[in-house]
Image 1 (tube, protein in one colour):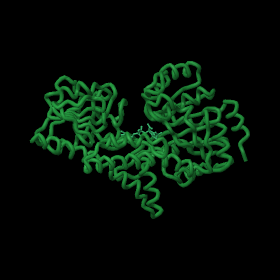
Image 2 (tube, rainbow, N blue to C red):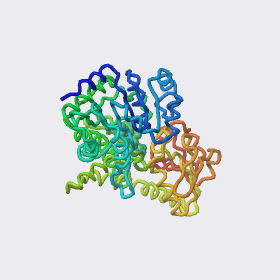
Image 3 (cartoon, rainbow, N blue to C red):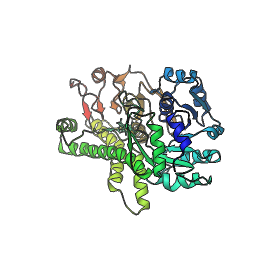
Image 4 (cartoon, protein in one colour):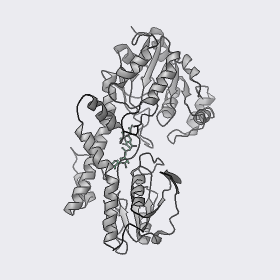
Length: 435
Ligand code: SAJ
């Protein structure tokens, strides 16, 4: 039984939408849903975020202030930290973090907290969409029973769907509206409702048969990346033992116009998606008595890359009769990937801790990251005016704004884990060692 009044509100854009979680997923989504003509309330626990949205000020690079302030001025967007706003919502979209906990298993506490906040305000004719990445079955096994405590019947009174977020921060080409949107419903009526909502907002929908399938789609996407990055990191280890140039081999393989997709070695796996999402999948399969070996092996290789980097440095210093202990090192780039300021799960932080453990003095330069906390240490990015003071420079993030030719002219030794020096004329006075 489809809720005629909710369907009508969705097609007429009179449904009141609330987005829970105003981060790199929720804020761009709030803007797109409002642009489609809905009134959207942003609900976040952090008052600074709600206040910024109300002031039309964006704190997410992919959302220009102008886009937000225009919608606020039109009265299409507001924001609050008061969960009471959920009482007037016809649609609630949950975009909260799903990290790993200390034992590296899924931490769905943010989603559960959102569900608890929502429960007292649930009413007939409400569509609830989960966008946060989680393990296959979570919506059906965990979220549905919680929301059913309202006494409302799913697929009849309320509608529960899953649609994986596919936000790629900084991607100029693919953004929220033009990235195909996978949608799955708990029941056929739930699928109808999420399609009715997102067909008004997104360029293309990809309906699948269930919320479990939609959850698995997302995990396949990111597990694909993590496993292939693990493979290419192992290729880098193999090429070193074979005396081959990893980057030459990959670039040549990448000329194959079919059946190959290049990935590149690096100091490890950073960010809040790729290192995390596959472990949600392997965790779930362990509860079904199955070991997802590719995921676990890729995780071992990827999390082992900081040690590989340090061992390469040790060999390079050793060739110059130097030890790591007592050496003065500069790390170029601590962000988890080029041209962004995000240091979450960044392998550069692991490399720095390992070098400290071996008695090195380590400073860093990152134009995107003015300061970073590593353990109990607060570090500041240093200027690049004393390059020859360092025994070695380690390029861990290949920000495009850095002049690598100049760096190679002044440094005594460069360990390049990102092939950032690919276009630099090799200069005997400054040996460059690459992963
Ligand atoms: N990395 C490598 N080698 C590679 C590619 C990546 O070492 O060949 C490293 C990066 O340096 C980084 C980590 O892996 O430390 C993750 O990099 P990423 O390029 O996957 O970037 P993310 O974490 O921003 O991933 C996001 C994901 N988007 C979503 O989950 C919605 C991912 O699915 C996208 O494919 C990815 O952006 C993208 O393509 O940029």
